[in-house]
Image (tube, one colour):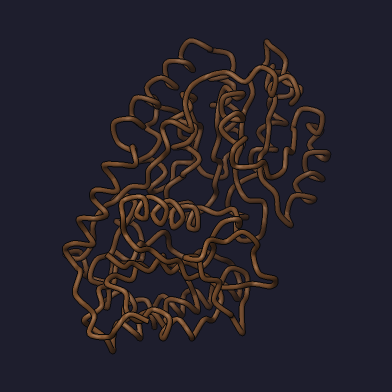
Length: 383
């Protein structure tokens, strides 16, 4: 089957949407499908891209949005087009093509509602009202990572339930597995009697909702506890976060590790005792990092948000707290830090659930079935 994945960001950019598009692409190609990726080209070309990853010129881009009108032509000849939404500037030519060429199957993964304040938020709301119904009504299937998130999303209001399918994202259970990383732990300055709290996430403006300031405020409340935090990630907000750590008086107990190579990331989970995802808005719709932590056998403390709460079961595989509540986050981290027995039990349960519900192979079987349901043979010849 010839499949096109259309996505606003793609590795090496660090972000959940591009990560999922990459996982789908590589796993589908391993199953014998002819898969290509179309993503905006921002700035200089990316070195090392395989020939099936196409960085499309974008004459206008703001943040992770990029106007890519040539997608209309570039998507010719594919059996299935799989759009990862939101993608402002790329969704529109993709949907226009579907409107004019109904014989080409279109699958949309609805990753999240767009969230912002101020003028940007007004633009998002206008788009939601004026264009979202038209965009989504053209899709043959709409995939959501959880029905919990779908029920509270803008998508649920469009009356397209018969096209919606739940398809959770998966985790590599071999790459992320329980174990220990004592050398890394020592290098990070975590003592044997201290609990290591790990955060993994972007620190740029599009990922401002990840809640780093909430974590830093929580760490201030844990000054007298044997707890250290390691923050993996980078971006334009990192200098401000480092200033906040100094302001809270926790700079010596919070390690900003920056971006780490993908091959080293599993060791950071193994070096940690607890993972946290303190996101503050519904821009966090699933929590891939909580899955990685679960596969690594450590519990997560996460914000009680739609979608995220399907990944972390409160009191079973981790703990949930109110978004933005630094006091509650500190209390949950303290509880797990000082009670190693319950912490290990939650981590073991998290690993078992990851194996049962989030292994990639069964999920890819389900994705292939979706493609088989909607596939139609394009009338155009392959480009």
